[in-house]
Image (tube, rainbow, N blue to C red):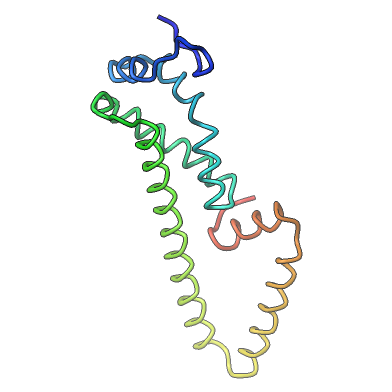
Length: 155
């Protein structure tokens, strides 16, 4: 049986979920098509990063596929997928914050041990100037810079 998107009156999400639980890849593909834009929107709105939002979309659907045998017991699939998305976003944001804190502490410790007071003041001025320059960049470039600088990602 072929399933279409929800615009089709024949679309039945419960039947689709039953098929996914049995390993039906086409049914899963239909589900992905139906929810991927909503998940991406939520992830992007909270992270402000296209790269992270895309990774979250992939992670959410991977989790659903891996736990597909538990899907038939879910009463509100829309709420279920939203909670998975929200939890993934919070997990990623928490990891970013922890990495940022560790980086700040490590950088500050290295500065304090290597620099004397005048070097420290110059470094602070430079960092402030750099931060102002980054804030003036267009959003895409700003995101790219922050991902490279803060998360160590490559261009």
